Length: 497
Image 1 (cartoon, one colour):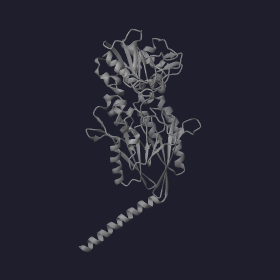
Image 2: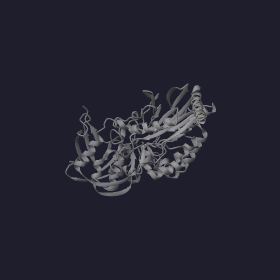
Image 3: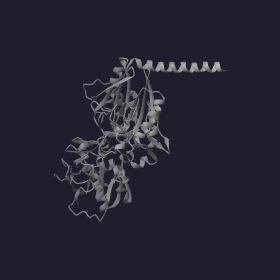
Image 4: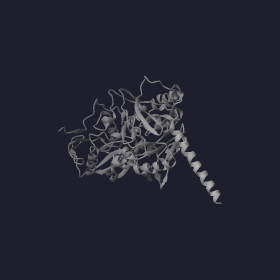
C-alpha cells in the first residue's frame, strides 16, 4: 500500500513537471499577436472594409490577429437604428470580429433586444459587471488560445450607464464596481493559467466621470492591456500606467487602433498606434459589397426629402455640447411647435450629426436625432427649470452631453462662477420676464423627464403628456418652412471675464 502511494506521488510530480515544462515551452519562443481595435462608432461602417483587409493581410503572413470592439457600436446611424442593431452585427460577423463589449448606448434598445443581438453574433459579447437579480446576464470573459498562449479578455461597461442612456431601459440591472470586478476576473483568469489579460472596457476618461468609474480603475495587477471607449479619446500610441497599456481609437470610425504584442521567454512588450481611415488604405471589396447591400435595405426610407436648408445646420459634437446652434434651435423649436409648450429642452448629447446645405432627407434627420425619443410635456415650477439650467452649464467648458439646448428662453451664464451658481439672467424668448414662482409647460425628450444625463430634478414634473417621436416632430416642423438662420441665435450666452 505504501509502495502504491509512493508510485502515485511520483506520477503526480511527473504530471506537474510535464505541465510546467509545457507551459514554459510555450513561452520559450517569440510569439507575436496583433490586436485590432475600434470604439464609439455609433453605427458607422466606414472603417470595417479597412479593418477586414488589414486583418486579412496579416493572416496571409501567418500572423496572429484578434479584432476587438470597445462598444457604442450598434446604435447611432440610420441603418443601425432602423434594424435595431442587426445590420451592424451582420457586418461584424462578415469581418470576423473576435469579441466586443456593450457600450452605454447599446442599452438604448433595451435588455431584451440586447439578448437577441447577442444570439446573432458569431463572436462573444463580454460584460462582466452587469447583473440582474444577482446573476450575470452576459458572458464575463473569453480565453483565446493562440500559438500556445492563453489570452484572457473580459468586458466592463460604465456604471454610469443608467444616466448616460435612457434610465427606464436599465431598471432592475445592477452595474458593479469596475475595479472590484477586474480584481475578481483577473484572479479567476489566473487560476486558468492565462498568459496575457486584456480588459475590453467602455469607461473612458471624461473629467466629470467619478474616479472609480474611469478607465484607470482597471489598472490592477495582472491586466496587461486595456482597450477602452466611451470618452471618444484618440490615443495615437496609447498611454502606460505602470505595467498596463491603455489604448483608445477616437470616435465615429475615423481611426482604428493596432497593438502589436510580443511575448518572448515570458517577457511581454507592446507597441500601439492608430491608423486614420482614408482612401489611401486598401479595402476589402467583399465587405464594401456587404455595406452596400445593408444600406440598400433601408434606402427607400432614408432617401425621402422632408425639407430644405439654405445653410449648413450645425450639429457638431463640440458645438452642441457648449453653445446653441442653428440646428439645436430648430430641433427645440419643433418640440414646442408639436406640443404648444412654453419651453423646449433637449440635451446636446442627443444631437449626433450635422445636416448639409440643400435638401434634407429622412436619413439626415435620423442621423441627427437617432435615439427615437418620445416627446413629453410636463409642468414644472420656474425654480426647478432654473435648477435644470444650472445643471446644463455645470460642466462647461467640458463638452458634455448634458449641456442643455432649449427653445423659449434666453439665458446668460458666468463660466467663472461656481457650478450651481452660474446662471445670471433668464428671460422668455419674447423678452418677457422669467418667473421662478410660475408653473411652465416644458416639452422635452422622455430621456430627460426620466432623469437622464443627471437631470433628476425633471422627474419632479407633473401632468406628464406624451406626444410623438422627436424625429417625427422635427419633420413636421420642417414641412412648415420655418425660418432657418445661418448661425445660432445666442439663446445661451456666456459672460467673458
